[in-house]
Amino acid sequence: MSSSTKLVGAAKKKDAERMLQKRPVLVLFYMIGCPHCQENEKAWKEAKQKAGKQVSVVEIDADATPDSANVSGFPTMKYIDGSGKETTTTGAKESGDAILSELQVKSSGGRRRRTNRRRSHRLSRKLRHRTLRNYIAFRK
Image 1: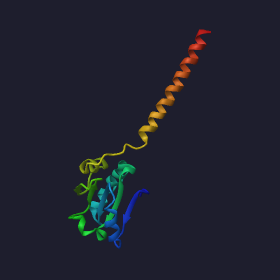
Image 2: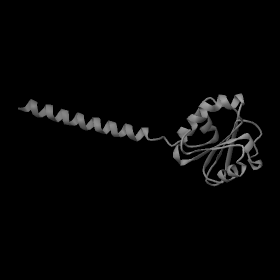
Image 3: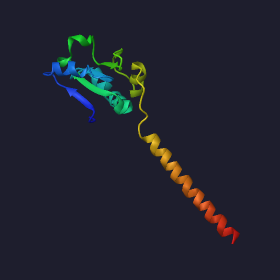
Image 4: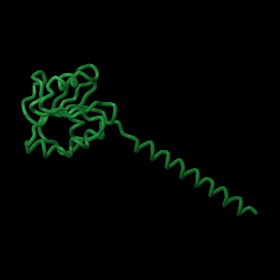
């Protein structure tokens, strides 16, 4: 579980209500022993990773689910944006992308893209240096 994920147990119903007040938040309501929840676990981990640090991620057990959440089945995933607009989806999903697209969450893209740019810049500098060195050696 990542450091930004909050796991709320059965005895912490008040904590669950408090965590739902943070914005934006991506929430998973699950039930221990539910086969659909277990099937959804891999896709949920992928969705958490792709959502990035811009979104708080909360996982709430069925016993800690507040009545105000209006959860009818498990697993239920909700995204509450900064303005308080809720988007809900129920049932196991195939991938993290399917969860994020259904909940209309924009993924952060992560650090990988910037790292690749730096690497390509570094490689192009080496190539320019090599080309210049070969040119100078050829002219002598």
